[in-house]
Length: 406
Image (cartoon, rainbow, N blue to C red; front, side, top):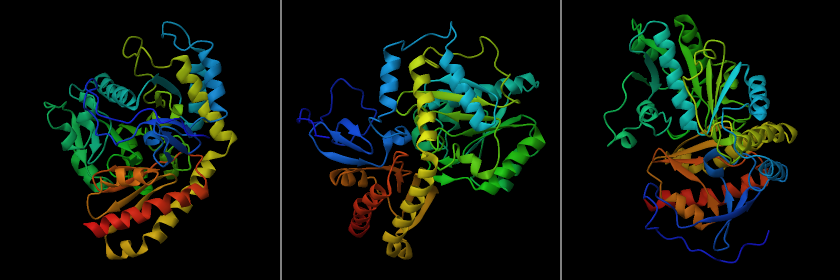
């Protein structure tokens, strides 16, 4: 694809709120796993819009389907039936083993709905002040409720008073979870990410997930799993918790479900599916025909193109290649760990590494840094082995140079 004529050099806008620290580039268009900026420079996209562009850019099956939907109807409010909601809900139920779906537009909205579900269940049980277990370093959104469930004091600061009703526990510590909830009749749910994304690509161990499932069953709590970032095939299974062989009561989806079109979903099983009744919850944009078509086509293409298998295979290759290239730094302790699964990988360094975003972009690679010192890789599920090797070829020298400079 020919790059566009340089047309826009990014600069701070006096009219846009300063809520983001942006790199000095603006993207113009993309093809596959590659994007171009408005000055014509090319980048390998190892971030996919933070796990959103599941199918990469300008996918030859997705784009015509969305164009077809645009020519029919984009939005229909939920006063009326939206047939594509039933199509997408049926597929999500089939893939998850759950029973019912509520559609919204973002991961934050999905998580907010889950918190409401848990609280309403508590009140149905006669609990005046329901409490929900959440985790250290978790991230569930930036509304007041989801911010309160989030385990990051830095992003909570300045927005107090936070919402109460949360019990915070450490990751992968079943004894800590049991101790924090012992003799507490107000607990109604455990709310977790299978792999913490913003928290530094930190996986919940399969054994731990099975222990949490058993504890929830024993106490009649909801097990609510936030798969917003780690779901939709990113780990090589449809949903990351499936590696542990468990089924949650509530699963939250967004990001990659629409391949770039905003969409969120609350997928619920028998214990939770009937909690909301007419008038308890709603949304203007959730479940609109364009978003539903994007979800339907994303799932279809993932299946047709074998992208679960590709994510597992290429992700394993990428993790191995990173470990080989950074073996000396790992032995020295300056690279502490490479973790994650499939095409959701984190490289934890011994020191903060936020500067790597711009350094890698200057060398043609888009990445993320999260939890201050973790390089996060979330490439599209169509990534090839050759493109994985290109990530390693660009990224690892930058990591080594950065570590030596400190």
